[in-house]
Amino acid sequence: MQTRCYRCGRSFHIKKEEIAFALEALEESEGAHYDVRCPSCRHTNRISIDQLRKAAPKREESEDSGEGSKQE
Image 1 (tube, rainbow, N blue to C red):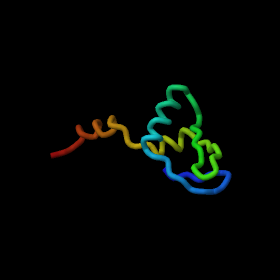
Image 2 (cartoon, rainbow, N blue to C red; image 1 turned 30 degrees about the vertical axis):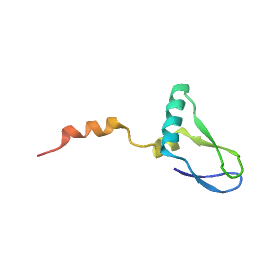
Image 3 (tube, rainbow, N blue to C red; image 1 turned 90 degrees about the horizontal axis):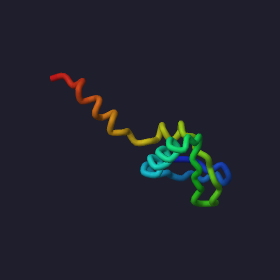
Image 4 (tube, helix red, strand yellow; image 1 turned 135 degrees about the vertical axis):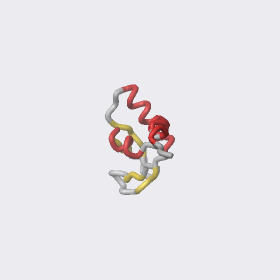
């Protein structure tokens, strides 16, 4: 996921593993946003849970449900 720092304007990448961890932690604590620090200026940027869900890797459950609908 690419995001841009609100303070210095630098663009940086958030890994899929970090996104998955953040989503899991936010769902347990019922949080609304995830705080990520800019690697350049160390300013804390808030990323909404909706943005994280859009960028999250696909879950295995969605792959399993598609197997029964295959036609031969």
